[in-house]
Amino acid sequence: MTVARFWRHLPQRYNMVGTKCEKCGRHFFPPRTFCPDCRRAGKIVEHKFTGSGTVVTFTVIHTAAEQYSMLTPYVLAIVKLDEGPQITTQVVMDPTKAKIGMKVKSVFRRIVTDGESGIIHYGTKFVPVE
Amino acid sequence: MRDVAVIGIGCTKFGEKWGSSFRDIFVEAGTLALEDARMSGEKIDAMYVGNMSAGRFIGQEHIGALIADYAGMASRHIPSTRVEAACASGGLAFRQAVIAVASGMEDIVVAAGVEKMTDVGSDESTDTLTGAADREWEGFMGATFPGLYAMIAQDYIHKYHMTREQLAQVAVKNHYNGARNPIAQFQSEITLDTVMKSTMVAEPLRLFDCSPVTDGAAAVIVAPLDRAKEFTDTPIKVLATAQASDSIALHDRRDISTLDATVAAGQRAFAMAHLSQKDIDMVEVHDCFSIAEICAIEDLGFCKKGTAGKFTADGETAIGGKIPVNTSGGLKACGHPVGATGIKQVYEIVQQLRGEAGKRQVDGAKIGMTHNVGGTGATVAVHILGRV
Image (cartoon, rainbow over all chains, first blue to last red; front, side, top):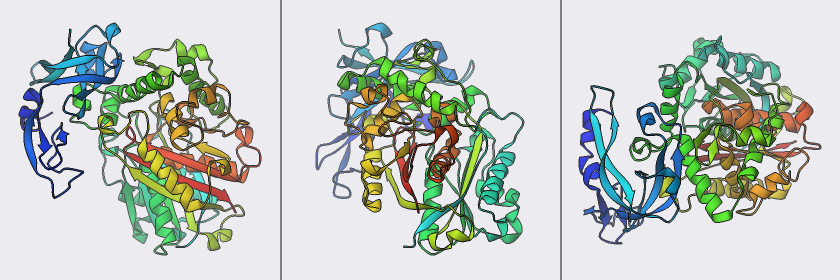
């Protein structure tokens, strides 16, 4: 991913800054600038998510894309954030202990590196809440 | 709207075609379709070509013109259009061709699909296919395509308690059918053990739950039904064409293990054809992964949600069962050259309806259905075809 393409989403990737519609109260992460329910009548504002959520479903990836292969086996999950939206993320944990319904919270982690001398992309992963 | 018929079909053998180029395979499929319709290329009014990613797979864009050119039609200047919806590109190309003829705008139209996937290494093809999902918010987080369908499978198993063995029966059945299909990439039967002992890809999906990387091309020719007899003794009528879309990312779906776009497209197709599930003699569904076939037959209404595992293990989706599913071998055994798959599904159903499916023939087949999915269900095309 090029610097600009990554950099323009730093608030979202580092700090889970999404949006919400003030008219209907629906939250969006990743952010949307258009509310599918209220459409043009909606009013979109920024919203920083708490990073607290629940695992809806997950898998353990054994065969990954090249840049992610040093992480295998890793837990990939869909997490429902407490505010409502669902996101795809990694859960940093012992893969044999992963469960649907598990409570998780966000952590700042390295996501991927563009080769030995390339950019290191950071972002949000999750860990189980003890 | 005018009634539309399929008057010619052609398909290359699917597989890793190291000796053939992108151009070679679509010319082969197109030539076979023209021969089948006993016509020359001069009669063609327009072309629609389904192709997901020639730009990534062979570094070539502008596929519509390229295909018309190498099909020998550059000097006739016919309109030729590429259609892209990831793995549903072929299904959408067929739909566009049908709409063009139904509207009266064109008469004789080719719908083709082509993908040449083995000119890049497996890392690049895996990465290219990830573009069918949400690159920024799924792919970047470490999601792979098998990984996304594995999350559908985990959600499904958690809710409906399907066994791992029941899921594996999808692959066993599709390989059985593929072994009877001369164009299939894999022509050997497998056992439950083959699936259960294969390499883990993304839990619970193993290698034999996944469709392969494939080169291949398919083409069909459509025409107004009232002109069909000029070209064939066995025209096959297009009874319905339907398409639906949904969120690009799996995590934004209403229900992780229901493809709402399949439900919507299926309902629209049945309504258009004034038919119901019991009228369908066989269906080609989009089994890019074993779990995808399980969801598809439920979401199209052939069995109740949560029961497709048992339905499959009981043999109801085999040839001779209540509703034969993927008589071609499906994406799993016939292969999945992404842009060509939707056209190959039509190719298979037309063969069945003409009674030309050989050892895979469904007795007395009169009406068949195709179901083609893009991504994890963000685009779905459903067609119903019938004997005249």
